[in-house]
Image 1: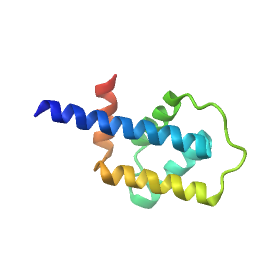
Image 2 (image 1 turned 45 degrees about the vertical axis):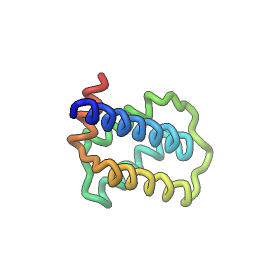
Image 3 (image 1 turned 180 degrees about the horizontal axis):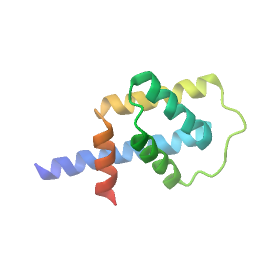
Image 4 (image 1 turned 120 degrees about the horizontal axis):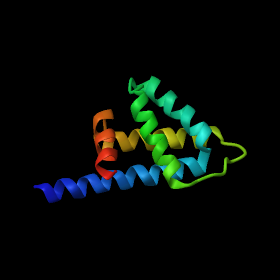
Length: 104
């Protein structure tokens, strides 16, 4: 029912927020923005609106420092986590945008 949908939506938003915070602390916002572009190109999910929505989630986390360096392992971990997030929640640009608009 509707309660189940709300709980699922809350779980998806929590997962997005947790990923955004962890990823931005690991590689920084600037690198994360580039990684979102790379992920979009690799997967065919090169949607500007989704990228913008995810970057807004990163900004909401309040992480302001950029790490000095990010290793290739850091990059791969962030990309892998992003891919797992999309797959586990069956996220698409439509669900990401609708989730964020329902929160507002």
